[in-house]
Length: 312
Ligand code: KIV
Image (cartoon, rainbow, N blue to C red; front, side):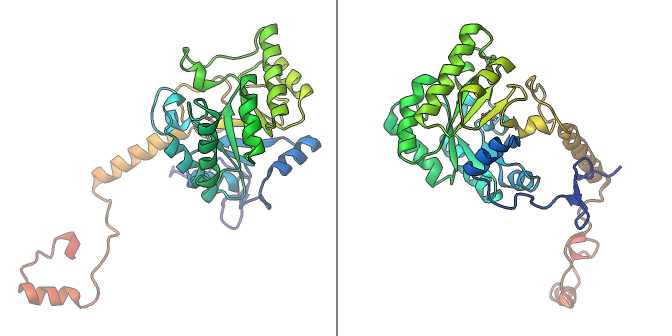
């Protein structure tokens, strides 16, 4: 069966027979997320890395797009997010904004871009806002980051505080592990959440924690809480788009793929190889303008080989 990119995606738009046209009527802002939280309407977030994917996801109605530092693994092929280059992070943030101007665009500040001093963190955050056109910057934090979050907030930089499992630091200590699995651990995550909200964080992102931790955090804070592997009670849910599409060889346990895109890409690759081998590719090439072939024949006195596909 020929590959049809729209085959498993619904709802379809009868006019285009493809995925629905943008259903984000208005640009998503922090106010939108707060309103949705109040109404108990969960919002959808995805980490992605390029304008085209962002455009399609936004057309699908995805409210928040994160230019995640997971790009270091997914796009650049590194072992961990520690290797995310800041210039690349800024560029992909800007690409998401260009591709999906109606989604809320969150920029992931890379490892060590907000750790050496408050001043350098401020300068780097301003690059994400000014060059990257980010709506919000995300930092992997605990309560000790409250003074930085406070400074950024007072300077007008909206901050999402990523708490719970923090891949940037946990990858240095042997890979991401769930947080808050003990009574002390739960209390620590709640303390982090409260301190960071008090410092001005406008969104919390809670990664890889038991549902009890999420509930305890949700009881203590007012800002929208995005979850990833944090149970169903969060205000929003996020995943890496490659995990969603089924392109990751060893996905995290919380990944819930909706497709098997990796396999489809492989099949498309195989199909292309077969077609190239069959010698049928390239047949729709350009033709010379009327009369030009005759001119050429006259010039070369007919010495051009007419069986050459470029000249036929
Ligand atoms: O970089 C990333 O993809 C993340 C996840 C929380 C989605 O930070």
